[in-house]
Length: 353
Image (cartoon, rainbow, N blue to C red):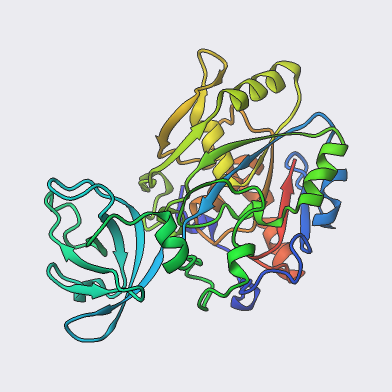
C-alpha cells in the first residue's frame, strides 16, 4: 500500500488558523461508512444524530503549556524549546532535567546556558546514552525541578505547526477541551474541542452514555509518513490509561450490543490498544502504544467515530480510512474541500457511523 494513495489536494486557506467565534459553532459532515453517502450538517445537530444508549468515549488529557522561551546567556539571542518529558539522569535532582525539542537545534549545544523571564536558569547537558545525537532533541537541565505549576506561569500552549501564529490568550481556553483533566499532552485531542457543557448535557438528556480514557498526545501526531510503503512506517509511542469504570462500561455496551462511539483518533487508539481479545474487555491501568491502524485493520471495540479532518498522507487519515474505507473517506474529503469546510485542529467535524 502506497503512502501517496492517501494524498488529496488541500488549499492552504482551508487550514483553520483560528477557532470558530463560539465553541461548537462548526459544521459537521455525516458519513455513512457502509454506503459512502455523506450529508452536510452542523455540530449542533450531533445529539440528534446519535442513537440513545450509545457509549461515547472521550480523551480527558489536558495540554501542557510546554513551549518555553529563553535568552541565551552567551549571546543574548532568543531560544525556544518544547518540553517533551522529564528525563532521568544519574546525579540530577528529579524533575530538573527534561527532554526537549529545540528550535534551531544545531545551535543549542551542551554547555549553552539560558535565562527564562522569571529568572530561572538552565543549560544544555550531554545525553549520557547518546540517543539524542544528530536529532533535534536535547536534555535541558534547570537549576531546580520544573513542574506544571511553573509551566502554567511561564509556558505557552504549543499550537500545531500548521497554525502559523503565536498562541493568544483565547487559546488557553479554546485549545483545551471542556472536560480536560489530566495534564500531559503536547497537542490537544482536537475532536473534543467542539464540545460544550451544553452539548454534553444534551447527550445526557438523550440517554447517551459517556466515559473517558486518557492518552497523552505526543509530537509524533505531527510527524509525516516518510516511507513510500505504508507498511514500512514506524509509529510513535504514546502513553495511555484506562480506568476500571471505563472498562466495565465498554464491556457492558459490547455485551448489550450498544454502539461504542470514539471521540477522536486518540480515543480510538486507546480502545483498540487496550482491548484484551482473550478476556473480551479492556485492560485496566497505564500502558503505552505504538498501534498503527491503516486499511486492513479489524476494529475490535469502536463502532462509530467522531473526528476532525486530517492532513494528507497522515497516519490519522489512514486510520479513518481503515474505519470507513479509503474511497469513502477521500470522496467525503473531496466534498469537504469543494464546500469549503475548515480543516485540522480548529476546523470542522465529521461523524462516521
